[in-house]
Image (tube, rainbow, N blue to C red; front, side, top):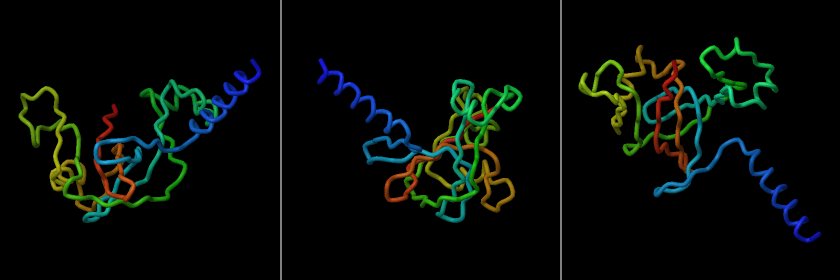
Length: 160
């Protein structure tokens, strides 16, 4: 009985440590990747990433830790951005860009889904780089990055 209890405590201890990691590694057919939520800047094939953390109403730990109130989360979320440190990654010809074509720039106006996927960086920049300087503003994105620093995909996080 003591042995079983010891094993159970060891499993809980190890799983507790694994739950404290900042970035989860996921697995795809092309390999393991890290996942970031971030604001972006593009300079040719270099992606600068200011990562942050989305906190929603279910994240009670962070709500309590940051002393957030419902007034801080009027749309049901809060973007916690404790650092201005930028990470840099490489865009490739295979990088997938997924975003909502709300103004029918690339999809038919009849298309109800509005989710557009492309590997064309120019299409992505046409949608988000309004002044041509590479800064994509305060639009949040989810980025999948391979271990070698190549960006697998960028997905717009559509917020209201």
